[in-house]
Image 1 (cartoon, rainbow, N blue to C red):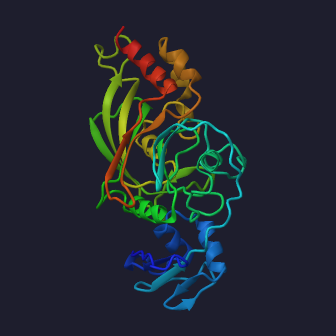
Image 2 (image 1 turned 180 degrees about the vertical axis):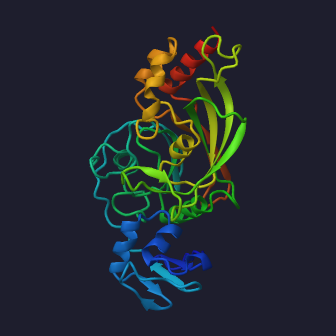
Image 3 (image 1 turned 30 degrees about the vertical axis):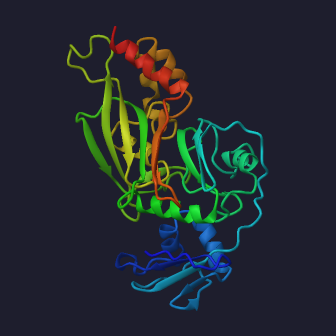
Length: 347
């Protein structure tokens, strides 16, 4: 893939060369795979609006099949006025300059407006905080958004304030840190503990055929997804370690090599260690909380969200090239949960 940023500020174009492994893929799927800041539905809309050319020809059919080596050109429209309204929602701003803003998102805050969440989102808060100084490339519902955290995942998130920053950051996230300083590390509290101290989950992901709101490991046709994990701490019930029994939970550091929807949650469940509190991918483990001694039993049973926190974010500044690195401590609810498991491990 190649991206071009024209000198003229009136034109914003993304250029893609179809790879050999993409031969025969749908046009909308191919573009959505490469231009990750745009949703597939947004790509389809742009195609139908005549903003995509294949080999110099305008194609208006999203299901057009591309050929290896073909040159695709996507002309992005001028940013539209943001439809969401600014709302005075408290933000924890970790860093801000003319190009980017880094926030520490609390659990429970949806990133951008969508079905069931027309207001009260991070985008609404950013519009109030930043005014009109947010990139519009992501569309009217996602101004400045280059990556996301689930509603109930807390932690660090960077937002673009200019179109130039949006393109530069999107390229870094698309590259997944292979050639640049991008780093994303999460803290996850999971049921049980892997037998090894560290490992990698390399399992493609796709929408679940049984429930389109969920993600599942795909046998074929999924998107490449890789998560590296390392055990930081194992927690045992009283006497379990001496008796040779398995840990009841573990604190993991998870680093993303790719950034798919629900990736860590699905990958951890896939290896048999779902996140504590994850109602979507760890529902079968909820009864385990009742078997724990207090205070872990009470705290784990009442924990209302997946125990996942984006604690480290590093990237190259879009204009200076300086590597910016930010760390976020565990929020109070997750810190209390970890403390409860430590308490039963040291009795």
